[in-house]
Length: 231
Image (cartoon, rainbow, N blue to C red; front, top):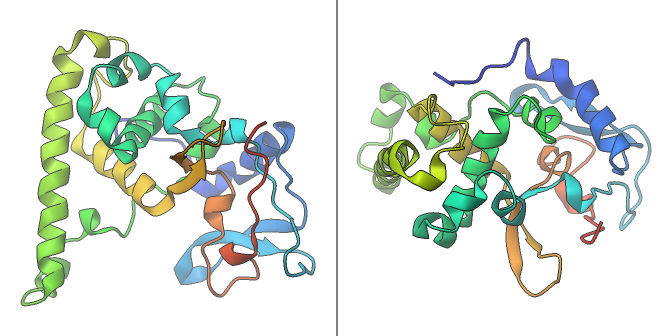
């Protein structure tokens, strides 16, 4: 299971998420977090939103990015590990795990609202996989299983043995469920954004923005304009 489990349900933490976002400069008016039944939680408009209207403003300091990972406790290992350097999505997954394990993390109000499990292939049960027999999808599922298992085995050894990993809060508690949760979180939520100097793009987890992917809700991701990449 997950080595870090929060009390209660994820929606118990939504008020704290809104408070944290507001106190740190995000705009949180004009929508609320609602349950869209089968699609899960998302943002629901509480007023009419015109086309091209800016209604969601998320300051850069609220984002979890590859850059914030390099400036965190993960930085020492990142500087030495070629896989982390080459694969931003894995870096972001470990950034998420390290912050989840830190009770004083700046991003904890956001992390506590993330699902505890996902519908990605990494969570498929055996009978679900059997339905994919004789399809191309079965090869993709097995490939994802194998790659994720190999990555977990590699990083488990790194975390236990690499001197630059000695300060990571994962040394005594890093399970496969931890890793597939982090990978799935990033897989379903990552966005490409410009770096602070605008010279290239980087990967980011964006609080609130990542709750706009609901096709039957009043707020859709196509209506959201992300601003303020320099704050």
